[in-house]
Image (tube, rainbow, N blue to C red; front, side, top):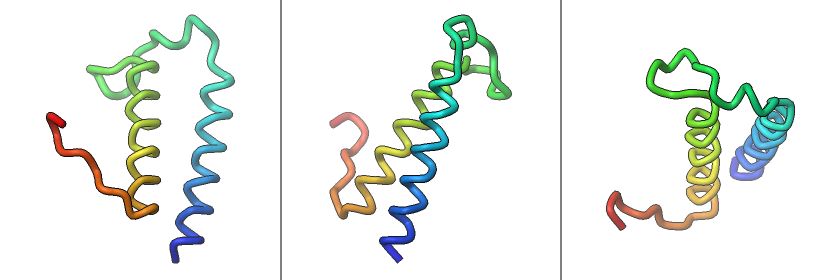
Length: 67
């Protein structure tokens, strides 16, 4: 199961990387469907989530809020 999850995560990173690479400088400040976030803020959120997910798959502890 972990191998499949890691493969899925790798594919997600690949897709996200291609989407981010395709962004033009002016597009980073465009609004998204999340009213409070622009494209850059949303991209940061998604990338951070991917890194957290990778830590979980490796069995690493997650930092508590405020650590």
